[in-house]
Length: 227
Figure 1: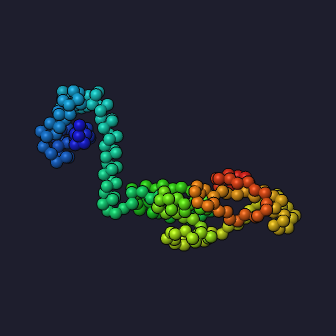
Figure 2: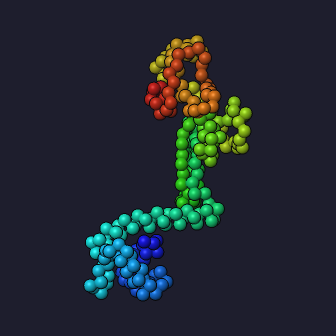
């Protein structure tokens, strides 16, 4: 069995006849007929019924063709990818985003980019603190979008995109008629988002030292816990 034979079956089914398939594939009709005959002889199965004016798939032919379509789908996707490489287009972009990054702004930019590059696949992951850049250093992603404050010692090429302001928040019912001071805040439990790094030193930021705390690994849980 060859890819050419599978492409021939697909052309016959979609074009409606051996002659039309030959014209579509820019081949002679005898060569089309011979390709199918050899395939049928190889596996001792009749794929097309020739009893009528237009060839039609036999029951075995329909089963064979259904499977062949998945092979052709993979082949055509591979062909598209090869053409992308020829044009110098990225086949896939892997991006790691820190949880405190302006996600809505980043996603808006990515939507514009991938609208112009529909054949480029996107692999997006969300990390926390050193976990974001660790993925970049380990070559698990191509780009990392993360705050760089306090991490200037990383040997990477960096470009400032925007500024993010960290604003501490707490449930309003907890501090009614109280003046907010560090001493008052230490009475309450801090919800901390854990650094997602695996083998580099973990870091923390914006934490009130000496206070009670709960550490979570998921930012959505943190919002729920505060609310």
